[in-house]
Image 1: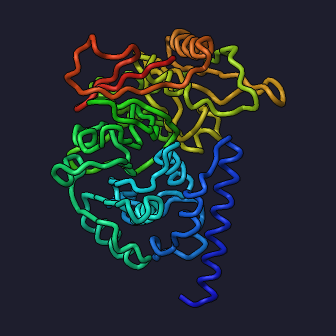
Image 2: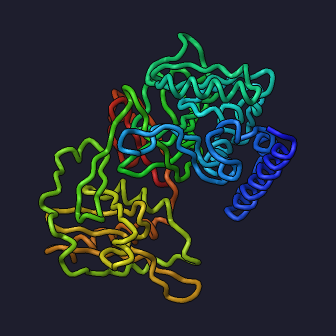
Image 3: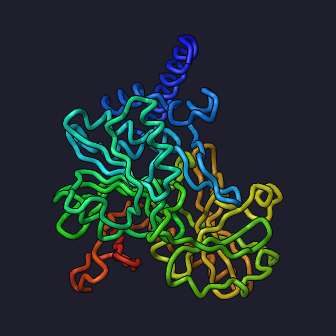
Length: 408
């Protein structure tokens, strides 16, 4: 790389970090000085050498390996997503001197972590795919991070017998939390993981307390799914060639969707909720409330053409809460403008019992509002934890653990 190219890469990197900091400020968050220093130090272009500099420093993910069908199998995540998770990992404690295990290897995030932990800390990054770990090793070496340990293994299991980490950060979408992750944490260690529940994904900051984890923060996230023993694919049910329902939990395995054939051909029903959103800001906690309070919950995914044509009007085409009951469907609609500053949550429905399912979802939106629009606290307990020991809340049983969502 020539001196001019190095200067251009530096300029692009600093411009990207300036933008990340400004976006965090708008969200009421702060970019910690040591995280900012790491972002300004690590050359992201070394970890995506296949693309031009401008794309290397764009705030988007770069897919580095694809399946045969073209979907992403491994990627270097978008800088905003990486930064958010690093802020969760950092917390109020910082990471200086920490020993970190990263699950899911792209190289770039491991280099950032190496900057954050300093000389007295350590970073181990693991991936199940040898092509991914070989690539991560090459990129880390090219960027000068020779002391990051790269391991090819299935992270569903313990990586190194008896070793404990202050932080485990997962950069792939996980459906469950295996016992090995909790067991490898120090007594007050932190797990940061994009956890899939009911088709939604949140990055949770979870602190170990005994054999349990308790959340400190959460945020919206999106990652390629985990592979290996922890892999669990969701499945979709077509409502239309441009609209599908996405399901992700055990109790939904018998849901074949045939009873919903042609549901969108029914006249659309609309119900206002009376729940007002100032400025039209997205209510991410509401989606999780609906997911944990509605028994027939799913996520509805819509192609933009279905939205443009007026076939559906979802809160988000990438995934909006839906309720499928018998032959009828309800979903959270796009916010309805009441004025320049006030917007109302709306529910739409189709099918013979549209009025019933629309009101069922609307009632839950009003219940969330009446409860003070709370954010959830997540408790992760072992699968065999006695019922009387579980915290109060909505319980979701996974393969290895029980998730309890408390709305205080």
